[in-house]
Image (cartoon, rainbow, N blue to C red):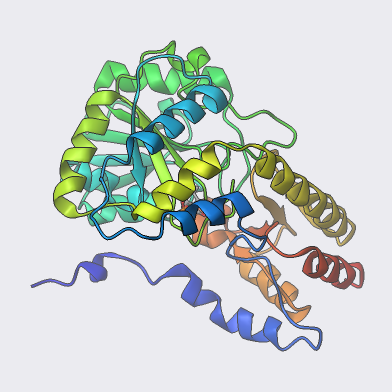
Length: 365
Ligand SMILES: Cc1ncc(COP(=O)(O)O)c(C=O)c1O
């Protein structure tokens, strides 16, 4: 038996432990801006829905309850501007789907998965778990005529760069995929966090015209609704692809727990808490952006999403170390691809008190 883990790299966050230890030794405590894990409360209505559904002795539906399916469909229509007939499926957070999607869709050895040149590492892990090869490319011309390509990931707003893909770019990728029978998957888990630009969903009528053939959009409630701890995500798009995913996931036991399904309905049916959370992140973003700029950082892209993609034009590990000595933990660009070796990713996910502490420390740079 060969160890599957041997095909995978070290878990990136383990490599950050030495810097974390340095930052944690700061007399006023660490300001952890590395992982991007939400710190604000779960909305009360969502907690109530979870509690109300806690008497759940039976197996839940892999496809989701009719109520959840309707809530997802309604949200995709409203927030993504999708007016056609699409399929929907809840997922156990979106990371598991990202990691297993190539496998679930039958992508395997000899096939190629295209991922952005600088991106969330799990796209590559998913390809590796399936035994497929990865090409990093940001433009269709960079991919070339490789007939082995079976799936292309796009991510807008991007983690880590905060870049937003314009409508015409999305349309070109969808057309390109359809011409070649390549599945186009758009990870849109930061869609509700546009700052300087309004992010567009791949499911929007402007992109697909209501025809979702070969197209999937992956969403998450982790950041939008502070539900990272609940593991609540979903995917929508091509009904045939969704049927295929459901068929395999039923066999594999990839089921969202019933109380979480109920909590997802409450989260999807409410936008007030989303606006409230957005306002918290907007304020933290302003403070951190100003402090970083004054400390000599350049902020690249970052027009949307949960991060400030920052550089001091030096190796990212040197920047991580310099920040750690000031008690601030950032994520090195190297986690996100070879083209990102001079950037660090600064998350907006810390309390107001910790963000103020970070700004104070940056002022003494
Ligand atoms: C681009 C992207 N996709 C997917 C995920 C996974 O999120 P979750 O599994 O919490 O839904 C993350 C988490 O940070 C992310 O940044």
